[in-house]
Length: 250
Image (cartoon, rainbow, N blue to C red; front, top):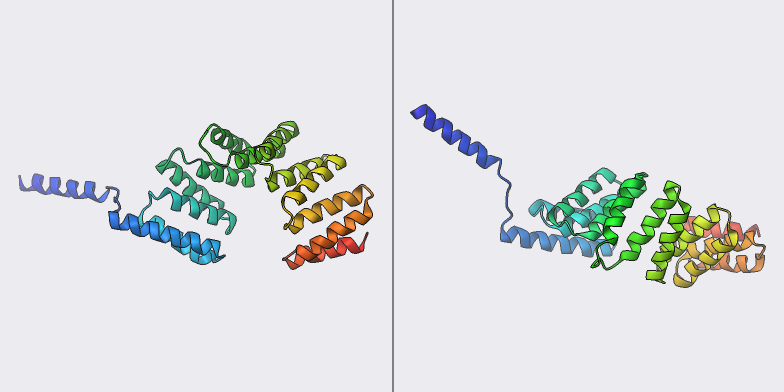
């Protein structure tokens, strides 16, 4: 009888040891604090500090979907650790299945990896969420995924829909210009890059794209103006030098 009793006790201990830890209210509150500190650090450009805060948040409360999503974004965009980012996005969706922002971010990783079918499936799911506040992002990225997959028609169709939803969607106009440029439609490319510049007047890249396009059309003087503005607005030395070099060659 004693052996049976001990065996039952050991079995009970093993069951308990396999149980998932449920964060206490204090741990959940602490996780929220670390998440908010991470957001502040990220906004201030302190990437390493943000990473540390988001990691601490998910350690304290793995079910904090916002922290899981934020950590995924940082790992994807700042550290290019795609597999780790996917893991955190999937955890966020496990906790909150209708978390369309996390689903879009997960699709973005697949898009970067060239897994276009996976990305397209997720973007289409997001677009079925009528409560998602920024559908133009998913719509635009869906279009780019179709284009990269080889379907230019669907690519243009979706990106045009995205800039219709949000006429100030700079990336949408940039990607339209890139598609037209890469498919040999210089006139439409220049129009799209012109909209890119108009909607994003502080982005040096917009002036570079339009300037190069205008030079192809033979509009040398206007192209020089755009490249000069690019050089003035560029904060990165490599971009500034590129704009200067191209302007000098016109």
